Length: 622
Image (cartoon, rainbow, N blue to C red; front, side, top):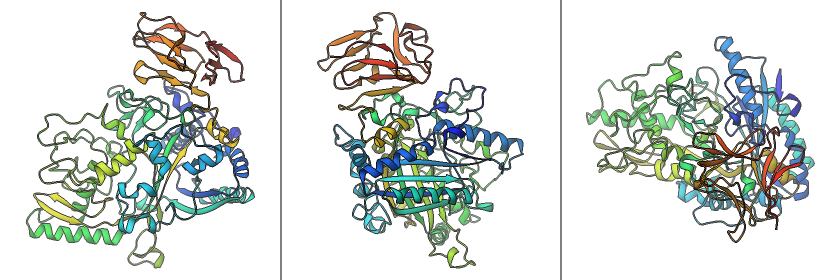
């Protein structure tokens, strides 16, 4: 049985325990962002539009084939259930083909016929998106052999890229069929395929690993409103110890973020996510030869045990052994166990703040410091995860490309054959998340700050000296950037708007602000709306509508009643809730699933039922 992202094949997630996980039912968020359209075979088509009108027609025809979170979450749940019933084997009869689409800044502008941002503040994610990956290369350490002039795509001087279409399938034959369809559709509408990037899960004993040989994809975060919390550790995902549940707004624009931080993006970006695509080439024999050479030096200096192996040192560079077992748990040797693999993400560095066991320069600690980040040795407290580090998390969706290295194999498996990682990640803020991790953590030699700088990340960073056991050890760079793209994966509603050549249903000063249930507005979130109407939750407990002169046009009348937040619920009701989550005011529009709360550009605020009927309004148009 093969499922595709078509309305006729969509099915509901299995029942039981998901009533409080509304994001699993989202038909607006594309399926790869939080559900994960993870497949063994992937092809990314980097596209250029030759004709804006034909490009919109192409997008309109593509829209029904785009996978939603609801569809992917349902399939993944069924797949996991079938796998468990079979004793761990993948269910061969259950297959799917997923499609995800994202657009670069020039792509959005071409389809919309206007600049997508009302303003571009310096240092903002809007600025990063508008400039694109090539213009940010120096900032991220993409210099020298990794500089854009050496890239295969996205270098800013060759053919422009307007969109990235990702096609993913369980079976290679299904991928081939889907790609044939997409190539024909592209040609029919003068959509040029600038570059094709393949990706595939490595086979056999290498399955689940990247080309250096280490298990990958273990440390991905869980998402609030999508993943079930553990009753005993509510900040962690049930059945996945150590996997923190992060507010959805860190990955999906318009949802609540860590620490209640506001998001100043226009309304059309709601339920979308910024996508980073990077082709990272890996020199496998070169990297392992370097590990062996550095181990020899360390042994000569008496800095490592005489029985230490290249596997021992490599594990400290990565932070895990090949099997995925953390060095923090098994410092002396790998201890692969399928029975224990479920807890490989349950890591604490609280008792290793100076990196005696897992070095401070290790890839794991550089990319996600967890509970062991002491910014300076003199600090008394570690940086908290909630309210600080959680807001830096990204959602990775990488996959290897190329054939594994085999010194005894053919040219296709040789040292010069193309191989590496197709790095893909999603976040709601390019600057605060992906770029911060890359620039301020991975590429910063003195992060965290110590008298002897720890060094850059020796796995994916540029050449560096690391501080290991009191001495400096030099590591050259063996992961090379060969292409990069910044794109945006919009909601299904915004895709429809772009197909119509507009963004006026998505917000900003030129359009209405559409708020999809469930939506929460707190006093700390600030105003939400358009130029003539802004919905605001006051500290005094009142929900109000302000006009362009900050004059109040409407109120819920709940000042002094203890209201702490306004919630637009999935049943279509807008309510003001107290601290005990009991309503102190209602719009009395329950019974309207799939309704939308819309702040109109004419100053009115309405609740519009799925069929388009206005069932409630503030009557504040002016």
